[in-house]
Length: 329
Image (cartoon, rainbow, N blue to C red; front, side):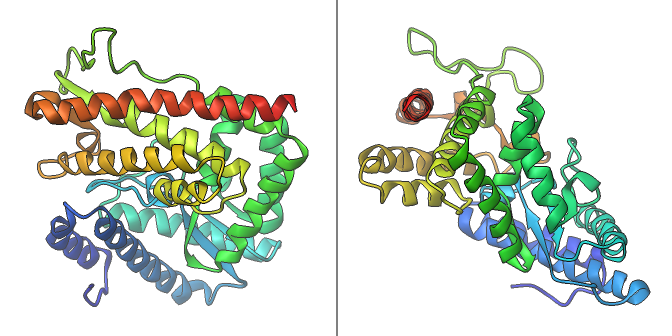
C-alpha cells in the first residue's frame, strides 16, 4: 500500500498521489489515513531515537475525533494524544519531545494543526498513565462544559501505535466512575443539547444564506453530530470500547432492548456516510468536506436527507429518555 519513506516530504507526495483512489470508499480511505499517520509516526520516532535513544517505556499514540471514529474525509486535521506507562521526569521529557515531533510530522505530510490544540504537542494530551487517570477523574469531577467536552473527545480515542491496553485501561476509569455516578451521562447529554435546526415545519431544508457555502447544508453540525454524540453517550452507558459510530451501533443492536432502533439508525448513518462521499471530489479545504450543495441533489436524495436529519433529532430524544430514566432509577 505504501512506499519506502525517508522523509515527511516523501510521505506527503505519496499521500497526495494515492488518496483519491479511496474517495468513494470510506473504509479504505480511513485505512489509508491510518497508514499515512503510522508512517509519519515511524519517522518521528526515528528522528527522536537518533538524538535521545529508544523510548524509556511502553506507550500508546492514539487518534481521536473523526480519526478515532474511523470517519475521516479526504481532508482531515489533527486530533491525537500520547499516554506512556512510566511516571517519571525522564519519560515525561522524552514523550514531550515525541509529541512535538509527531504534530510537526503530521503537519508536514498534509494534516493541518488542530485549532483546539488537541494534539500530542499539547501537555494536556500527553501524559503518563497515572497522570492521565488523575486528569480523567478531574474532568469527571469538575462538571464544567469544557471538561465534559474533553471527555467526549477522549472517549473516541483509538490506539494507532504502541500498547493499546493503556488506552483501554483509561477507558475503564471512565466506565468505573460512571457506574458509581450515573449523572455523568446526564452531563454528557446536557453538553450536546444544541442541535442546529435543519428542516423547517413545511419540510424545507435549511441552508446557509450567505458566504462561501451559500445554498449548502452543514452536514457535520446538522447530521453527523446528532448521531455521533447520541450514540457515544449510549455506548458509554453500556461500556462499549469501540470507537466507530457504525461499530457502536452494531454493538448496541446486539442488546435486545436497543435492537430495532439501533439497526434503523445504523442504516441511516451508513447512508449519511455515502452522501458525504459526494463532497470529496472537489474538496480543497477542511470545510469543503462538510458542506453539501442541496441544489445538486435529486428529489429522492433530498427526501432521504430530510429523513436522516429528522431522525438525528429523534435519536437524540430517544437517548435522552434512556439517560433520564437511568438517573431517576
